[in-house]
Length: 114
Length: 111
Image (tube, rainbow over all chains, first blue to last red; front, top):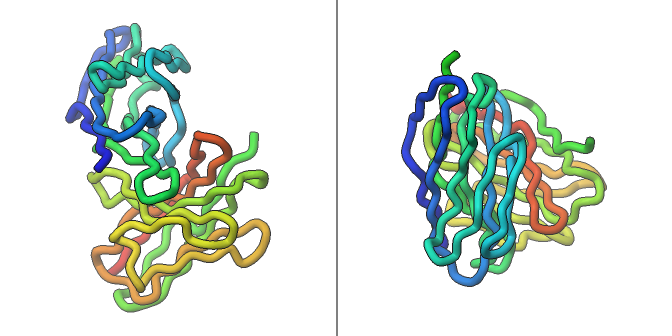
């Protein structure tokens, strides 16, 4: 079945450091790919998405490129801030079973220190 | 900006009791979902709902679970007889197009 494998955390960085969180997927067909972010005490917020191969999703300085050849959707940011501290979830949309549902990775907790 | 809302934010119940978790999806959305996240684990799909019926349900969604859209706005998840292992964060989501928008979640604690 469809699945998402995400870099295990936690990740701790200093402010202004470069961030990469790796995400690879297994899927039949051509899923859409997403990054969701969960700030402490809050729900899941869509960060960015890409719907087809070679698409780049971007938002708030974060970027991820849909790479079909490597089945990856790595999240990057050039200069992280303390306010980026959160848990990041990679997800794909899967139509296995007949409805469009999200399959999530385990999440990566990011802590950014001043 | 419209958002998905959920009530209550935290529910504490005794094992064996029934609970109803409530969600108000975004008004023009057509597809509705429930997911859960056990502490420290991944977010898992429970059920999808479209056109007033279940589209798909996971193995987790057994006979103890049910969903309903009793009026034009609310979308509810009922657990008939809660078990300790039902303790989790429950997220409602609604969808228009290919993007799902999540509510803030209800933390269910079963004692």
